[in-house]
Length: 191
Image (cartoon, rainbow, N blue to C red; front, top):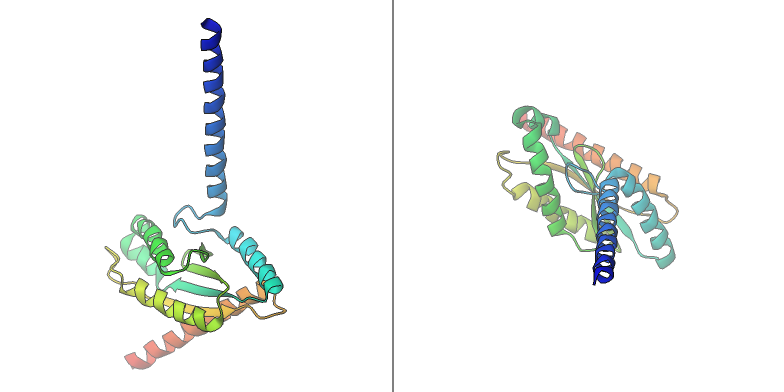
């Protein structure tokens, strides 16, 4: 009886140790891949994912698209509402964006105000339609205590011969062009 009890205790302890080790490794993996504030994947994981999707697109001849989302006046939101409020808003923002995309699509946070959606097997026209839907949905959402949130958006599709850095640069250029256009529109409408 004593030997059986000791065996069961040893077996239970080994099972608990294995389970806790598994939980720890899953937690470390999640911390390594995700942004702690927003819950979106981080920029390191973005580079690896984009390279993987481009390689897959080259072999399957399918397209991969990116949608950039930049929260306008992010620093002003931080100044007005405080860091804590904005940090509480970001996970809800990411969840809302994830609700608008397909299961295979992923959300990444590349900068404090910039998010990128990676859309495998999505042609450019589909990415543009999805971009407009996501933008409209996120801007119409009530973000308490922030009154409203406006976004700058851009979509690009991988072109054969491009590497991940080229696609990322094109997305950045489109986002900058969008920002300039919105600033010019604002200046024109104010004047």
